[in-house]
Length: 113
Length: 115
Image 1 (cartoon, helix red, strand yellow):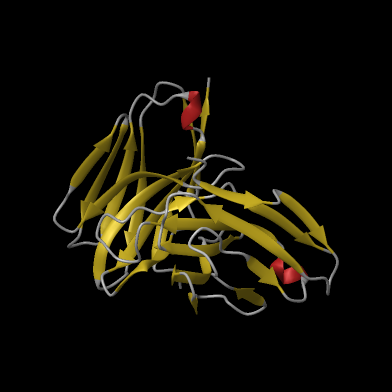
Image 2: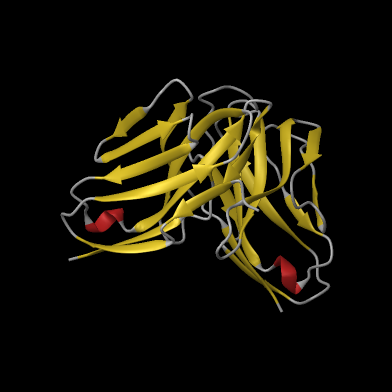
């Protein structure tokens, strides 16, 4: 069973609207959680990185939250743009093997005009 | 800086053929790794290297070989291609293996089809 579960699998939103993506993980011992954006045909690009002591981090219109107690994270996209159409991947690393990351399957976001 | 580069972008092989996927980085990163990405699944680690001359297996190493003779290059070799190896392959690098804010940079990927 994947240790990082993302929901929904996909969603379609209208340009200008907000949306929230969810990530639940069971990875332990926890080190940090990252959100990546992957455009079609490209490699993932980092959006945010949070450790257990951080519960919110923003990168422009992207805001990630982390609840290390419940092992949940969310990524909120504000005022979506067509360029936000991509797969968003939640990635968790263990404190005993930082280099070995656990990847979620991703949420495919489609922003329509 | 070019970042992480991968060649080729696309490749079609027949079952049993061998080939090498190339990966290079110009950021003087110690840590390099190879992942495969399959539909509906998260990226899975194939092999990784924590420095020149040092490599180790990841989650799905069978059927693949790696070597790291220089800091810059980390090629992935498919010994005898099988249809199950049809996937998109990503190379990634980071400054070091450890560190709380150690960011991994990914290449553009190689789409491999094995017939």
